[in-house]
Image (cartoon, rainbow, N blue to C red):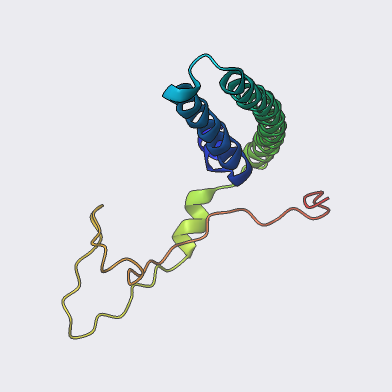
Length: 154
């Protein structure tokens, strides 16, 4: 949340303006010839009022942004719960169907990439950045067939 708010251009502009007003108030207080004068007090008060008003507006904007982020997070959490329930249901159906993954896998052939004149080194958990994208994998499909009359996607 913090990073999103700090990277938002509108929030950054308000914070920069608040900082500029703080600097300006300091400069006004530092003018020796105006020390204690009516002009100095009036200008400092005007700058301070503007700074306080802007700080209030920024606080309201940050609260609004955080509220929107909270709604998005709650939505993601709700979606995650739905996915968990769907996965549990599919796992239950798979267990009840007596589906034999090992039997399905044993009927499939695992095709290895053709080895050219280059030496082939099997993947052992490490990778080299210049080789990423050139690795070739072959996999078997142990997933059960999609049930007919599925309600997914609705």
